[in-house]
Image (cartoon, rainbow, N blue to C red; front, side, top):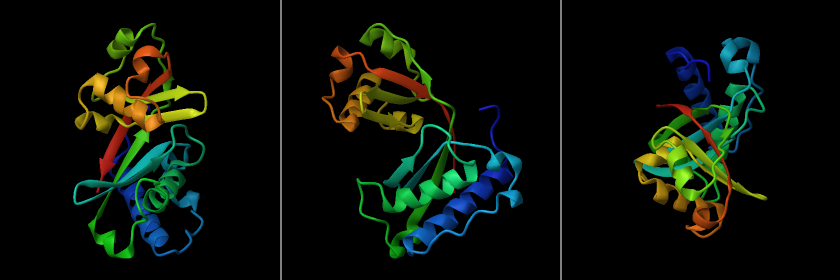
Length: 189
C-alpha cells in the first residue's frame, strides 16, 4: 500500500459501508455504485475486510485477501456479507443496527513467507503488524493483525489459526504450511 487513505476517503468508505449494511439488513438491494462520483483511489482495485462489533464483541467479519474489484465496491459487498453471511453468527437484525460499529481493514497484497522450520516461522511473523494466512490444499484461514490484541503469543496465534483452518492447533509445528503475511490500514466509526 503506497500510502494511507485521507480522512475524507476513509469517511466516504465508512459512509458507504453503513449504507450498504442498513440496506442489506433490511433486505433491500444495493443501488449500482457510480464510481465516477468517487475519489480516484476509491475506484482503484482494493482488498478489504469489514468487521462488525456490537458492544465491543465481534458480530461479523468478512473480506477478501486479494483485490478483484474497486475498493468502494469491495467495502460495500463485505459490509453486507459481514452482517448476513458470516457463518459464525446469525444474521444481524434491524433492531441491532444502532449498536453495530463498523471497522474497515484495507489490506496490502499477501506476501509468501519462506521458512524451513516452526522455529523460523515464529521468527518471521511480526506480532501486532502482520496478518497471517495459512494454506494447505483447499484449506485456508487468516487472522487480521488486530487479532494479535487477543492472541499476543505467536504460538497461540498460529494454533488458533490452525483451528480456524479446521486442523489441530499444533498442526503448524509438524506440517509445513503455505504461509503468507500482509498488513492493514484499519479505521472505524
